Amino acid sequence: MPYINRNQVILLFSFFFLLGTSYILAIFYGENLVNEKSVTTEISTKNQAVNSEEKLKIDLTFVKKYFLKEGDTFTNVLRQTNLNENEIDNIISIISKKIDLRKLKVGTIIETYTKSIGDKTIVNEIIIYPDSEKRIYVQKVNNNFIAGEDKKKLFQKLFLHQVEIHNSIYASLKKVGIPDEIIMEFVQLYSFDIDFQRDIRKGNKIKVFFDVYTDSQNEFVKSGKIYFSEIVLDDVSYDLYRFSIEGDEFVEYFNSEGKSATKALMKTPINGARLSSGFGMRKHPILGYNKKHQGVDFAAPTGTPIMAAGTGYIEFVGNNGGAGKYIRIKHMNGYKTSYSHLSKYASGIKKNVKVRQGQVIGYVGNTGMSTGPHLHYEVIFNGKRINPMKMKLPSGKQLKDENLEIFIQEKERIDADMIQISSMN
Image (cartoon, rainbow, N blue to C red; front, side, top):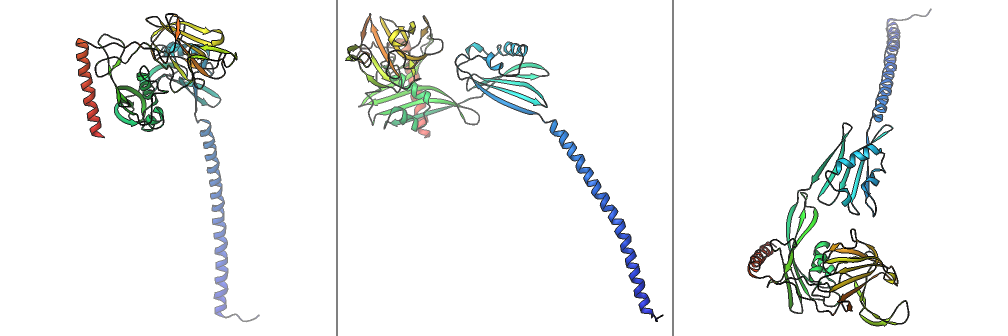
């Protein structure tokens, strides 16, 4: 047996000590690592189960928007949801206390909010937007429907614009941000004295003082009123002020001397159309022979609104042979006007209904004997058809005495407002 010295014994002992220690540590930490992995896996599995359970409890709300079409009703919209007949009857009964559902206009927006919980769907809110200012709603609270109404708080803003015409009245006014409703009202105010197809020239000047209403976010909600307007044609100025005579339900416009802008009839009962055929003899485009054209034609796209040329009563509405869809209005002092080839009638237009000057009564079409969409417009005086573009229109009323004094005060107030607005710009 070979001899082993003291140093070799110490090294041999140290080697076996380290080997044993490593083995013990490996067993101890290996078990802990396995246990730690098991716990992590178990916690992860539990979290997945919890997340899966939470997902099943998530509520989803679906919003659907409807636009009322011609012939649609609020009831028809509700029947497109999963509401039963008893719920529909209940909703109609409740909401009818807030709004007359029979008077909802074409284009009215209706929204339904449907909540989906698992495999169940519940209609929990319905909103009607009858106009840009308010909303009527029905909500489901504790299995019962309740109705409410929200109205926007509006803020008035006054504007004064002076514009020089370059291309067209519409384009020139639109360029400075004047709303469409104000532009249309402006055209109507002067349609008794001015033929917008022929009288307007480049360089003509317009002034208009009006207001609009915005919400709390300064977003446009609606147009307001024109308080003053002026148009200058070849150094001739036509100015108009808004004024209401006490006891009169209608608001009118008067010039500086207190003379009303309202005449018996409008020359052009349509906005933005082109005079395509005048009054007199012409070769009929369909019949092919010469025949007297006893009215005037205004070419315009299908659907263009047609206005009543004057206040009066609907004498006839319906199909009238070659005239297609047709309206005739009886006015005062022996005048009548007729409107042919319409695509459809405005809501509420029927025989014996009273219409106001400027009110929309129908829309341009191509019905009857017609070669394209246009309005055929006739004026009948004491049973005889006359040229609308050359007729002598009777003058409007003249303010007198106390009414004239009150008008002058109102005129001065409007003038002062315009000076103030102008100084702020």
